[in-house]
Length: 408
Image 1 (tube, one colour):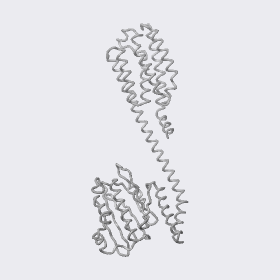
Image 2 (spheres, helix red, strand yellow):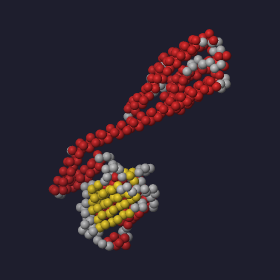
Image 3 (cartoon, one colour):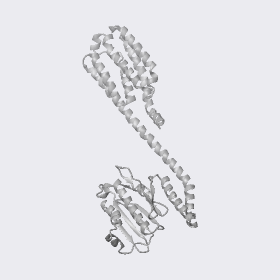
Image 4 (tube, one colour):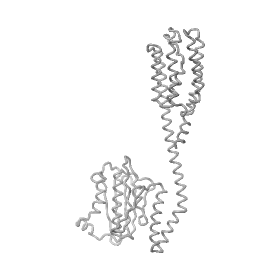
């Protein structure tokens, strides 16, 4: 990953480094040529000759250093800027005082900008601001006063270097985003390929084991049930990775297998309700859901999932271990509807009122109470001998969750 990111960064920055390399050579030749044309006007030309010799050797010897960001180290940048600042400060010593006051060029001339630009390309606009500030201070010391042309040149170099540094930072951020998008695309393609292979082999075998186990009975039936659960989990996983890691807890008192949703980390944006309902699917629980995400506020999604879990728990307790259940998720424009239906014996008329009178508030609190706190509703329809259906409705614009929902 680190190597890939480094290569992709170089693909964007490499033209800048090449341009900087050419700029340094050309500006070095320009500075030397400028000195040659005004040699006789210098008060101490031998100082300038010595400086230009050092500048030429340094520029040519360090060309590999400005070939890419990896070779352009902080130590090199510091030494490069030191040579530029030293040339500016040596100008009053080598040149005539009248030429300095008249606004004559410094010894490194525009070569100094290349040193500042190296800071910008390497470290962004903050490094560029630091380097240009040091160059500005050196120019003010060289002139002795903030002359108009000096201030103009300093501001020009400062603005240009900071702008280039900012562009480099934006380019690097774009490259990281692109690299991440390419990785996601590659992972999606690989998951689709694996899904095809698994569908043609493993899932079909598990489905066959489930069917044959149910026919044979005995221990084979238990093996078939387990194969059916694994088929559902694997199918959900390869279809999009919606299922978070779930835990299976054994209820020793009743022998029921309860699949519980793992505690989800706090999220600031909407979550996909399908991800919270998917762990409930199994050999005896079928889940039908939309192909697209079903977004809900995190607290609301958890409350709906908990209400579905309570409804399935009622199926196991009152309809028997052999009862089947179906979960249907409908994503409407203004609300989300989740229906839980079973093929059990149904609830006798008046039984719910009797249970509430006896203090059994499973449906009243675990299901209706949760949906009421969300501003939704829960409707229970049961016909003796025809099973039970629980319809949960929750609005999509839930912004606050009161009571228990706020504490979960």
